[in-house]
Image 1 (tube, rainbow, N blue to C red):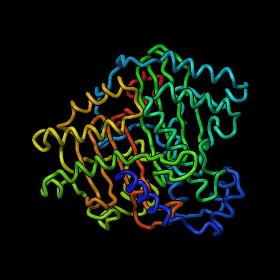
Image 2 (tube, rainbow, N blue to C red):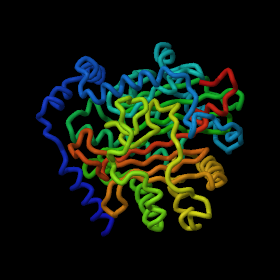
Image 3 (cartoon, one colour):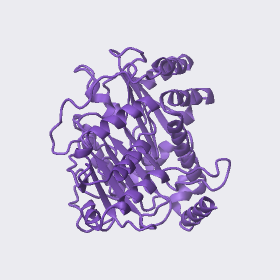
Image 4 (cartoon, rainbow, N blue to C red):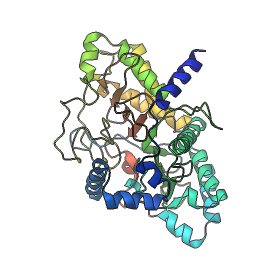
Length: 429
C-alpha cells in the first residue's frame, strides 16, 4: 500500500505541472522532424540560455581530451588491465550480427576509428546537435532491435532494464507533451568505435546517446568500462499506458537521503556545501565553460562536454574516522546502484576498487535533507564520481527543482572515461 500511495503522489506531482500544450513551443514542434526541430533552435537561438550553453560546449568539445581531475593533474597508475570474466564473445557476436544487416552506406555511417573524437559527442537534451552514427528510429525495426541486443549483451540484466526504462520514459514524455517525433523510445543514435574483437590488444566500443540516456561503453578483451554515462527522467515514472508502473532513479535518491539523514548535525553541516539548490554563493560569472551553475546542468559539474573539468573535493571524507560501517555500507550501496549497468563480476571488481579509496572519498550535498526536499549529492574519489540532481522543469513547468525530474551522471576521473587510461598511446583520444 505504501508503494502505491507513493506512486500515486508522484503521478499527481508531475501531472500538476503539465504545460499549456497549445503554446507555439509545442504546436510548432509537433510539425517538425528532429532535424527541423534543431535547425529552428539554432536559427532562432531560442531559448537563449540553452543556445549559449551549446556554444560553450563547442569550445569544450574542441579541447584535447585530458580527463576530469581534482586539481588539473592526472593521477597515474589507478587503472589496470584485468580479466573481468566478461562474455566478450557474446557481445562481439551481437555486434557482428548488426553489421551483417547493414548496407555499405550504413556501415560507413556507424563505424569510426577507436580513437575518434566522436566518443565525446554525446549530450542529454532532446536536440539532436551531433547526428552521428545510426539513429534507431530511422532504421528498419530488425536493425533497431539488433542495436538493443548489443546493449543487452553488454550490460547487466538489471542495467539493460534500466536503459530500456529510460528510453520508455522518454517515449512517455513525448506522448505527454505531444512531441513523439522528438522524444520516443528510438530517438537515440548509435556509433561503433574500432572493430569488434575478443582480444585485449584490439579494444573497441560503442556510444548510445540521446535525450536522458547516454552510455559510453569500452571493451578491452574481457574488460568493460561504462563511463561516462548520463541517465535522467522527466518524469521519473510512467503512470499510464503499456509501460505503466515503470519507475527509475528513486533508489539512488532514497539511499542518498538515508545517508545524509544518518550523519550527525556537525557532519551534515560540513557535507552541505550549499544550503539552497540555486544558492547565490554558487560561482556564476557568465562563462558557461566554468560556471558552477547553469540552467541545463544545474548543479551537475561533470555533464556533457565536461571531459576535462577540474572538480575540487568538497564535503566530508568517508573513511572509518568519519563514517560508521553502516554509513559506509550505505555509501557503497549508492555506488553499486550507480554502477548497475556493469555486469556482475565487473561491478564487483569496481566496487572493490572504490572500497580501497574510501579514505580519499568525499560526500557532498546541496539543498535540504528533509523527507520532501529536492537535493543534489556527489560521491567523489580518485576512481569514481557519482552525481545525483533533482531538476526544475524542461518540458514540465515546475520552476523549482522537484523529485519527479532526476539527472544522474557517472565519471571516471584521472583519464578513466571512455576507457582512455587502458588504451595504448596510438589509441588514446
